[in-house]
Length: 113
Length: 116
Image (cartoon, rainbow over all chains, first blue to last red; front, side, top):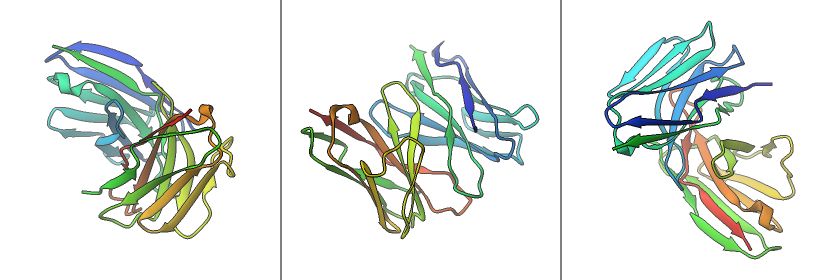
């Protein structure tokens, strides 16, 4: 069935360093890839997304890259800050049909001050 | 931006009772709402997809009679956990989409259910 693998499961970086989280999806028909940030006890918040007709998208310190051939997409956070500490989830979806998201298993990011 | 309100944020109930969780889209019409369950330090597990005016579509392994979903209007979906047991204790999250194709889901803030 459809599957999204996410690595690493935990990631610790020093404040100011970059963090990279990688996801691989199985369904080649997927064409929409959002990233969510979830803080403790809260619902996930969309931080950036990318569609399959784009290879890279950037929003300030956050960027996402997509390699459709390899079915990989990655989240890049530069100049990390303590408030970036949270759990990050990637997801893959098809914009047609049920819009069901297949979520990755999550990455717990800790930014050390 | 799109806002989804979920209530209550926390609820404690006794075994055998039922609990209703509400999910409202505040500034858009949500043609589809989704209900997820999340265990500690785990990913979101889709329970069901709820379309306004029709029966919910449940994922494999999710008991329809235990987790009743009603999507009565374009702005409200409810999840009722019936005859709750301690193993139903979890974090339940809803999300909604207007299916405009322009944006992804908007998630509610989640409900922490504890069954004692």
